[in-house]
Length: 220
Image (cartoon, rainbow, N blue to C red; front, side, top):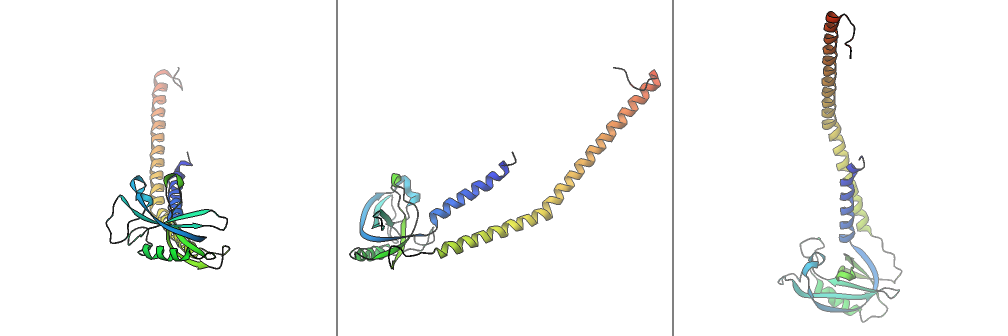
């Protein structure tokens, strides 16, 4: 049973890890091979899509831009190219049209490698794609990419968590623990008082029994 008290913290950590894995940026080194526009019925998969171009009418069915790419090993990479605007996640992307134009230009260059910055997952079963937010040229497929933003963000998040945890510990030691100790002492005093009352009652019964029957203990 003692492990059950850690279950809420474990669930909170799991949910936080999943959200961070989805929304934090990642980068792939690929060659862009083309772009396309598909008519998509967002429907039940709406949480995995962002929004139509800023300034256009939102709808359940809309045109979505895609960027097609391949890795050094020949594996396909497909990214959706949607604006995020001022909403969540806060990537403040308004230039999906410009990104498509740049991608079309790079698709004509055979030996150009780019680092595509994106977030989200690729789930083929549900036609879910990561959203490309930007890309830049790199020297080659073996370019080293250090996720500085993720390192700093997670470091700050851990620092904030540690600060909150320490503050809660101090508040608990100052406010909660003394109260629990006082309650425990009161319960202990009450139990001892009940014990003394029971002993006193037993002594009175034995004393009256001796007076009546002249025996030290009542017979059973």
